[in-house]
Image (cartoon, rainbow, N blue to C red; front, side, top):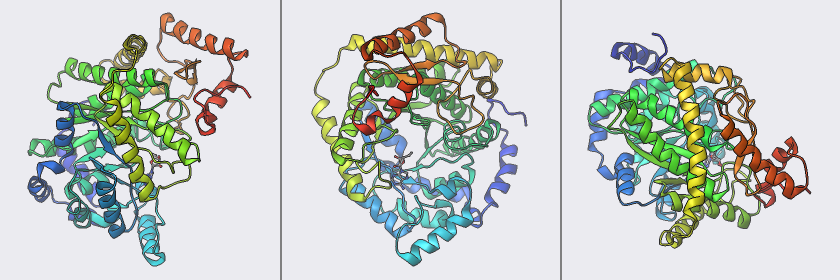
Length: 483
Ligand SMILES: CC[C@H]1O[C@@H](n2cnc3c(N)ncnc32)[C@H](O)[C@@H]1O
């Protein structure tokens, strides 16, 4: 079948499904009809789509941590603690790195060693090895929806097992779980694998079970210009909608300048809905997700809390539907359950002290929205035209020629020519546009912003500024000022 943005043929899916379910022994536990009736037996409060829609209508922002440990009993206790002590509205199950690379044999060894040593020797929960029945114990032990969070270019079997188990939200995409996570996986392959996942979610939808899909907006989490993150999120929403997905969350990672971050989420929300409607998808419920800062954190917990609290402000300004909450132990590794729960309470406190205030200059937000929107439209319209009207074809071609590009990505399938840097107020601008399709108005806007910083810092615009910015926040600043 030629790779394009067209809903799959059902027989093509069924044929591939045989191979997917046979790729590990737990695949044989999956039975679609049985899974549909199990999912229909779950209360609506366990559906991420229901909880997201309700929050969206009530203009509330939901809180969700990341969490995953290899021993099932420990993982259940961890999630129960985060629900009870952290007040999480949606729980995660963060998947381990072996599973993300389909290395289930090593994951199995990791489980056995963790059990033998009585401690976590994997950096997440290996859901494929546990299988459907064991994973259902997680769903039945908590009262809120649980989402699968990972970084898997080929998540076909992971999706089959976890969706059948009752996880009602699934993060990732053919671009966002490839480019920042893998070096040698082609976009053709990862987009095909994720069309499978979206087709499966669409099949559940046709049977009355609405699973939420979420795009991984932050990408590499290092100074990613908002328009790049937003464009890719919209493309993944279009891919998912074509396969029949009816509930989609588009994500964005906090960069640090509060006005730019709020503007980015506003544009993300508005343009995702506009592009879906303009391509004929009228029944996909769109929500927005803000990730607390995904770059290098300060080790000092007090300063880490400052980064987290600052990151909550754009969610208040933009009414983001959900925040993925970081923890004060981000710089040291997998957080303790106490630190994870405390970060949730910190975020809730900031939300509830700010949501009654109107404290930002809306004109400055709109100025940022204007430039972000122009950049996103330039990118998306270019992807559409190089794809001759097909966004899958356009994405592959655009990445090959740098018309779409992600800074600091490990993947050899992105040009890596684009280079970001902060301006004098810490907003992320372009130091090098690479091959991005921007006109002179956009380019001169960024140049002017960088000249302001160069003048203030009494130094030339240089790559040194980029390096200074990469370490700035872990050293206590937003902008990497010269020493
Ligand atoms: C996307 C990367 C983020 O996921 C976080 N992360 C990865 N694995 C886990 C984990 N097992 N528990 C909690 N947080 C985790 C990590 O700290 C980083 O902030």
